[in-house]
Length: 118
Image 1 (spheres, rainbow, N blue to C red):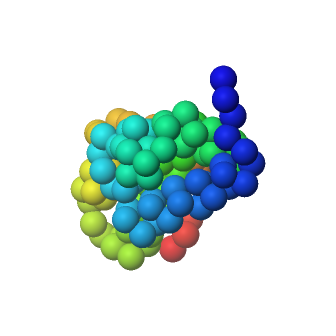
Image 2 (image 1 turned 60 degrees about the vertical axis):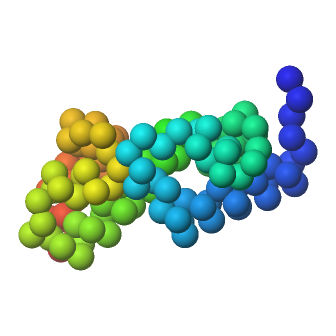
Image 3 (image 1 turned 60 degrees about the horizontal axis):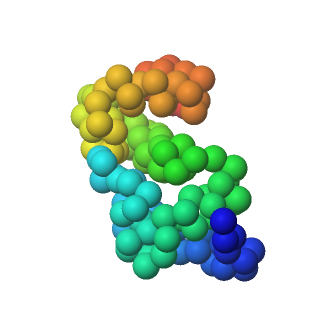
């Protein structure tokens, strides 16, 4: 298997992060590794390798980290908004997936997290 040079992987990772932050691609419910690769004009394997090298995680964990950060901002800015609505706006497929992921990232439920931060 061919491995991309380290500087290319670093540059690619910067481009991935820029796409995620500026375009908020993580809000797309069924975002796939191949979507990012196509937008950047690179092989999916390089996108995966770049994320694993710089964040030490899988593509789905990487995307979910952006989603959870987005949820935290939404919860803080709109504490009376329904959590289920925020979950769906943040790119999660369903509430069960959202709650499980949120708890994995924060060790708290969204309500517990919100109460701890207010």
